[in-house]
Length: 210
Image (cartoon, rainbow, N blue to C red; front, top):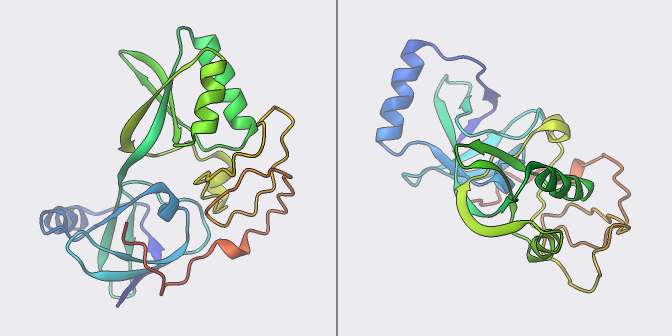
């Protein structure tokens, strides 16, 4: 199995041409946000070849990142469209208020500015969506490549934030994060956050084919 362990900051014209040929042959990785947060994992290319990723902990893989291995082979990462919640508001101040409440819960957010106005995106969580609706914002389902703002996540913290709630909490503003960060992110919220995050590396033997 090929192991890709270096992220390329720049590409030559020859490498660009090679990647174009690989995309035409489906020789690239289509990965969702949760998978791209890990530095070590096993994945399968669109064409069906199993590969390993073993990177330094230097931040979340972004869509269009290009990796290389000891043999000089290339592998491009494409952000996979995934189910997310889109948030809109009648005015920018209200949207900013929604962003504050989501940020206060350490929710990764993607921002959009288009001709239609501003919007936020976050991984689906109906408890958070209901909170935003109660604040007067509008939420709807969407499927897009999820590329949240990096910020603290650029340091390589593997917050997967899939938000599978127990739904036993009231989710008020005083909720305490109990972030065990085991890819389920159950919102018991005691928020110890010791930033060790050593347990986030996924074994190369683990399959992330989704």
